[in-house]
Length: 448
Image (cartoon, rainbow, N blue to C red; front, side, top):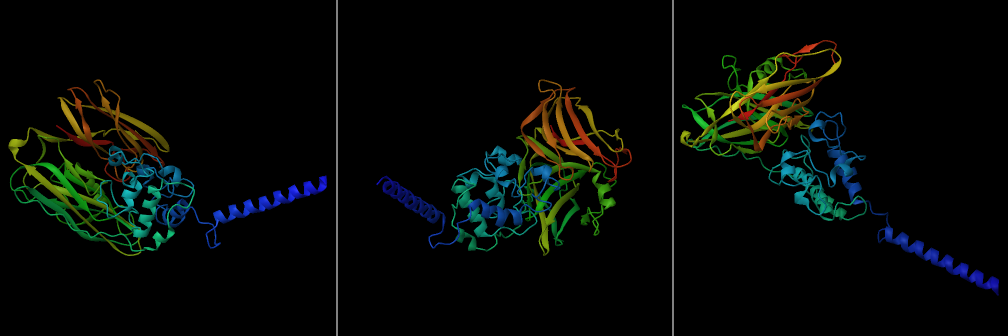
């Protein structure tokens, strides 16, 4: 009898175990007995990010040229942890309170803002930069994943959404020029960027004003895949490039165009940056003085990772105010260290102090160095904020431009300190100079 009871109990346990296994298996399988549903995040990683974003030159590795600018890897090892609940390096996104991915809130997620070409641009160019835009299905799939809490595991979004394969697109319509009484517009007209290349160009435009004007607002616009757009003036007007001619920074074989590079050393920064669709307004009562027929150099940079040509095109509107409304004239900062050297095969940090001989208010900062430059810091010199780092840039090709929400107020005798780290990987000593083989150490910006 004892053996019978024991056998019966074992049989019941086996049946129960089989039943539980069957239930568990069926809960993981599709209703029709098909394969287990793939995690939604795995689909996003394997079918979208790895193919369109984690590519060479973009978000594939720390050796990508743009990595120092965004610090974002999107390969299968790093992507999830680098996106979800992570603060971006994008200053505008940080100011607006966005995260790279904010679970449950797609409009507060920079990832969605950057891939949705229908969303008005507030945070730089649409991604993938230089590549084909994602499809409407891919964008909606990522959006729904964020709404569902952006989980790493689990199938939470209907895969049928991905069947909508129309590429996200938005017609480019040039912005309207200001009325003649309100300002003027300058442009880099349409040019071609060949497949699998990048192109950086300059055009010297002569301002149309016949008398001195004062600019208090600058609005910029560029086509998709424009990495940056910058407006420059010239330090020496006797060394101007030809007007209205498109000048390339690189030759057809990829080598540096030394003529264009030399002309860049005559620049004074006047506005712009990596966000090519933006508006900058000077503080109330402050404006930039533009004399009649001023030479202004427009600079645009485009990436094209597609197999077909794409077009570049940029516009800038400069809005003016009556001189009677101008209390302070914006002045350019041009603090340069011309006397330094970097020994061969060495890393060296050079610290330089610059002072103002009068009380000033700084409203914009940017930097300039060449390819050996690793990091450019700007610190406040003197006063209660002495030594405070107010600027840091690690991308020599596309330096960060910051327009200060809280201007820096300095007294006479106070100033700025540049702390610049170079890594001289060449076999010769490198000094300050104008060529691509030399280096620079310059703080640009605005003050009043």
